[in-house]
Length: 497
Image (cartoon, rainbow, N blue to C red):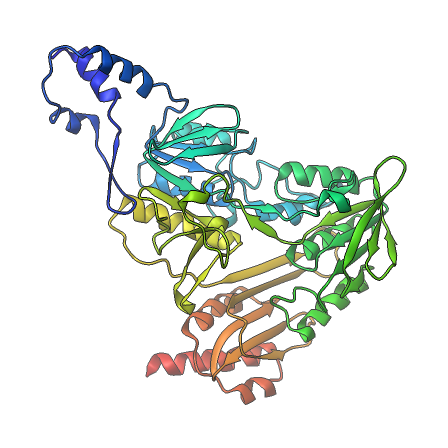
């Protein structure tokens, strides 16, 4: 057989052969060549299939990652570390930028220009975890094909192809879904799309908000969670009249106890931020120019504003992958401990994945950068190696606010574990405070504000080991340091048994 025929025949063969659930075996051309049956002349039907088989718009087809956030960036790094990126990996994203550390968008990115705000390329992945800054040039150097500003709109599981918004047809051998979440929005009928109303999910959203903040006088933040707290803290630096509205009784009610929330609320109030708690919004009002002018509450009252930021949560971006298998309880795409979906060769990682939370024996979906990073690394390592360990994630959340120049008080707290059982609070928030969650005598979770590096490093050890702890001793501790020493002693006692 001529070398031309061989090369043409090889072009029609996928480089990836699937075995079992998501396990892929890549066949180098030199090895596959020895197994090609000898043929004389390719038929016309073969030549037609050759044309069809090569009419794809991506050159790198062995692995395709859909999404351009944290998970995609850390997946790319893991592919590179295992020597499986060059000429094999394609990333397709709706973003115009290479993957970046998304948490920056509601933190340092929102600082005024005189407060040294964060800007790209400064926070491309993987700088958030101490890794290399993966700029667009880095992806080129690594032989990774990047398709920007072209979201995937369809998938054909049988043919292993994707279609994009621009009409591209992409081929994949193994597919990794890393689409993350989209911001929950107010309906248009109550003013959710009015000029001056903002949501934050990407750089374009943050840029639009910054443009408004530069002209704004009164800001209303809807939502008392992470987004609301971080945006309001940034607004203080802009010297805006800021009000936070939320339906719960206190800030960050999914995590904070009422007592802990009160301490943070007081800090915000000391910085001029006002709160409207237990409130429900009827609609947003607009002026003659169509721009938002007020927030109308269900009790009939109104709060004047010229800029609104809505931070009421997010939804997993599962479209167009619904047929892969969704979890109706926590949302997202259901996967196993290796991030394999119900379809062989298709994986899901990051915010969009509903995975087994091994430590607490339940299915969970975690919207956090730490999980995005670790799930990507675990999935790709499992895909490329003999690594078969079940993902064993310890829930971790943190926030850093008021960190701009000139701030009178910087805030940085970390939480590890599960906030179940009875809460024991130690400290007066000057600057430290700690909360310990104890259930059936076991330490289940711990939150620490303004800890030292050594103290922060202790938290995951406590939360993962769940030692038996003397609640009375914690309650009687005179300082955060003493409470942490009590918890550490409990940890060491159990380790010695």
